[in-house]
Image (tube, rainbow, N blue to C red; front, side, top):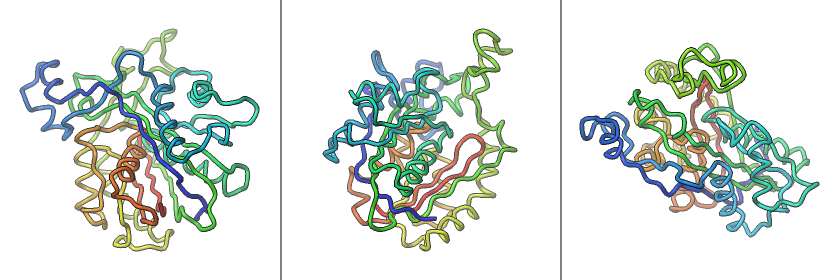
Length: 328
């Protein structure tokens, strides 16, 4: 299904604190070079003093609003994607709107959580609202602070992640600019990528068996086995729905899951390797913010130009598959 929705502008925010893999080797007593060799991430950015999910979201949205020359009170809706919100309530979207000085009584504001595919999920919700005529102008933002949930005893997962935020502004279009958007899940793989504690089951009132349960855990090999088996068919279906061949795609913007995942995309899927946006080495995996940060990078560096055909593709905990084909 296609939607008459266009991306008007993009924005991103990267924390100022740059943490290199050399820094992590020294901090955790690893052999020099081991962190980079195992992760493919040379550096990632983590929040510093005074930085929060809301402050990063405000930074990304402010940049997008400036580029579009929109006032924040022109927005009909603000959707924020994040795995962990700033606080349980109110939503990060509401807290962000307050920081931006939104006038009360007009804006719809809410959060979504779909793991690393939160941005695509929010993009779908925004497209529904615009296509139905409910909203005219919508902001979609994604933000995560992965650095607060890492188990540094597990090199395979902890070395991958960075913090950040990114945003897009959307409005209706005379033509279908989003040609296809698909999301699906494989719930049998729900244990492969998780943070077990911190919700209603295990928390400070009802503590988990171990404090490690508050930290991120991942079976990367198990996830790759499922991705290897199922992703080719998923991508074929997405491209067929969009009515385009893989060779027609100008820019591929993947979720920056891992070096192995990006290599699989280049070598095993029917996309041209030179079209793939790869910012993993300098940003790491930014969870919900990963895909829109890569999209913003593609636009800001001129790789994705107006009229260009873009493929968004990725996976998330669940296990979730998601993708979109759009004309920028």
